[in-house]
Image (cartoon, rainbow, N blue to C red; front, side):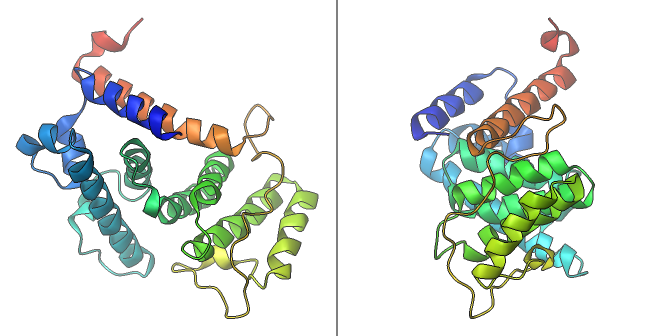
Length: 240
């Protein structure tokens, strides 16, 4: 999503009468009384999104290591996967992309482990789309290794093999995605932008999912979330 589009989406979201201020403020650790002001200030909102994302990552690290998470975010009813997806949406909306690769990789793994290959592929695409060489090498290569597993399970053996061979050529373990805290071996090469196959299968309708469509998916996810909140608060308002 371009900066102009994300700014417009943010403005539309904040102007909605049913914008869930209390829920968003709870997710971002803001006092409800301060949320309306803080979320309209790009700097304070971005800081809040990044702080919430870091807290989520720490709590998810604890979860994956078998420890009791110390962060309050772990008590959220949608933790871990739903919280991660919401934070990705907030990161896009408030233009705070730095932690999207880490967030999206965790969400992709959750969906894969739950058997939802389409969503797993979508969020793997987001890792590749936002990864920066030198900063997100481990996350980006992990996403490609996860896609090998996704394609293998989906029956796309040739595509899975092509990606696996690219991993091997760059010294990256094919099962890197399984690591709770992925670290690359010393001989691994930096992220090169990826060797993802054309599109990001599988989808229920059999068509490919491109990187651009993955970004659009996040925007549509936010829109759908807001619509659901409207329906919960006023069932009649979401009809039609």
